[in-house]
Image (cartoon, rainbow, N blue to C red; front, top):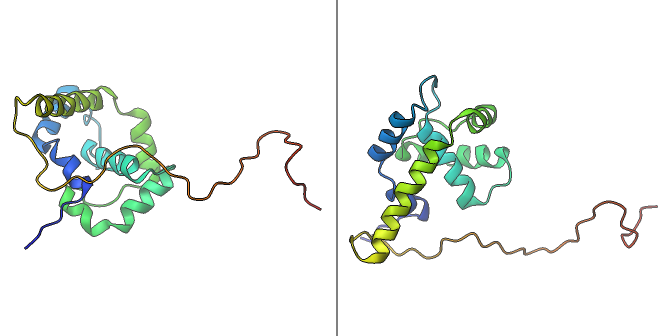
Length: 150
């Protein structure tokens, strides 16, 4: 039986939950948190990056549409837009810098051959490339070449 592992799950494998919780304790970012954990914020922001969401509304809507799958990631329910905005504004960024450095160290070690980390399934593509399928001119300011209404 073939098991398919999403790119999202493969990215999360780079960051074990235990290491993340140790970083949370180190930076004390959940000191006054009530119900909205740093792990849920991380999942939401990764979803934002991989899904190329442009707004909090898109992030919350996308997470809400896949609510059953969130339980497997350790997220009880999708966050509300105001909760996510508040957390992004007030939580310490040092936690996510530490997380980034942990993942970077793992990836550099894998590329240098010192460790045997690899993806268990094929990773097709993971980059920040975007392709505009519908190219529409953007009108800014006073553009005299733009068509005017009646």
